Amino acid sequence: MIRKLITRLFSSSKRAPALGKRMEASGRSLGIDPARLPDSALTVVRNLQQAGFEAYIVGGAVRDLLLGLKPKDFDVATNATPEQVKPLFRRALLIGRRFRIVHVLFGREVIEVSTFRASPDAAAATVDGDERSRDKLAGRQHAVDPSGRVLRDNVWGSQDEDAARRDFTVNALYYDPTRDMVVDYHHGLRDLKARTLRMIGEPAQRYREDPVRLLRVARFAAKLGFDIAPGTLHPIASQCELLRNVPAARLFDETIKLLQTGHALASLDNLRRLRLHSGLLPLLDLALSQPRGEAFVLAALGDTDARIASGKTASPSFLFACLLWPQVGQRWEELQAEGVPQIAALDQAADEVLAAQSERLAIQRRIASDVREIWGLQPRLARRSARYAQGVLEHPRFRAAFDFLLLRARTGEALAELAEWWQAFQDGDEEQRSALLEQAARGGTGDATRKRRRRRRKPAAADDSAQGPATDGD
Ligand code: ATP
Ligand code: MG
Image (cartoon, rainbow, N blue to C red; front, side, top):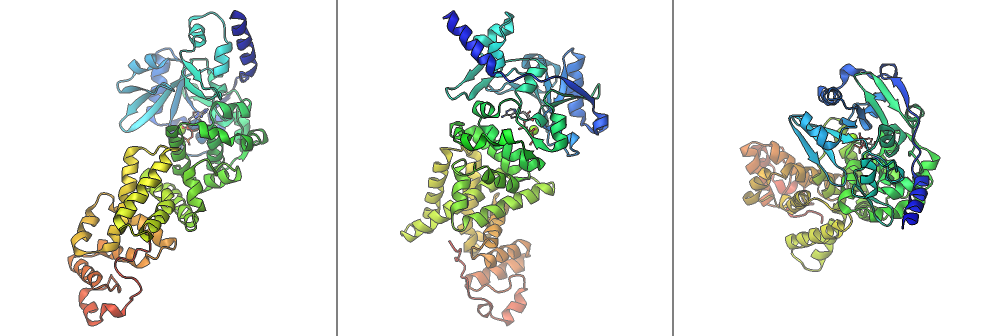
């Protein structure tokens, strides 16, 4: 038994990622201006340091500051355990099981504080007899599944161990604003300068530990415009199967990050280039293989990127409604052709597609219900009857449903006139709205922006008779 344990420790210690050599550089000399850091992050670091702990801004924020980009959010790494961190702040929450951290809240802003962690193998190999090592060996804080995927990751460690278990060299930089010092264990600064995305340690093993890192390669290469180091790139082709093993909820989180951080199109290109898109996200896979799907999905992702570039947010519901629409739309047509009434056919198509999808990628229930509403409003938008139009306009999902209609119209579904009608209906005063309703009731279309008086002189039927009110092209 003991022999077995020693053999295991010995073999795993060989796999433990090498700890990097600590290098330090002045933040100012690298272009970081501490005055531009948010008070929230500075407060968290200072409170921890004043309580006698080490504390650094870490990861994406340091990388982005060094690249002159505006960090999306600020994370802090410390040698204090979550239980030690929490009482230092008035509003702080202990979060997570698989990965226990503290959220420190400043209004709506959240600073995520994580305790330095050791890598799985380093933890098993560190047999120095102290209390924490015994905890590690007892396996209480760390767990892997048979394929090597990490299920729980709460083994505390030192800063160099923490750096070694991060994903890319450029994501493993630490910044201490008090001493204006950047700490780098894995030549992250060198890779940042060379604009190279490089996995820390042995890439194939790192992908096995956490297959989501495969998606992260595509995302960061797109976001940063970096080249992927050859050693990081090569194992990907033979490892994409690993993604099948990732729980649906985790895949959902990482997919949202991939699609919603302003670089969705470029990330998708990378996924295709890396041959990760096919079989990986059934959602994308199917959407892109539908006859009308590709144009629609690409337009949706392009719009999302543009929204984020202009400082707006993009709702996951809208995005998922778009990504799944090619399948839903096609199934809706099929069911109607089989004689199922329009609304029932849409409901059934939605049920089928959402159920099939959630086996691989768990779409949160709240989002799924918004997605349904966006779809469900499409035939209601096509109706334009006096009875329903005002209600549709006041529906909480109207804006999203209308944007969705515009996208459908733009990508070839025969809906341009309907979209114009709704634009005019939204913009119109009471008189214009009733004129529009009247005109829709007559089955005519015409220039919806014209005043009633003028249209009376010119019969609407003469304007354009190509599309009746219920022609929604589906
Ligand atoms: P972004 O600005 O897009 O949020 P980020 O680098 O902050 O980029 P996050 O997903 O927020 O990315 O992760 C924060 C940090 O946590 C990363 O920089 C990296 O150091 C570490 N990290 C996150 N996910 C993983 C992972 N799957 N494996 C290893 N390290 C990870
Ligand atoms: Mg981040």
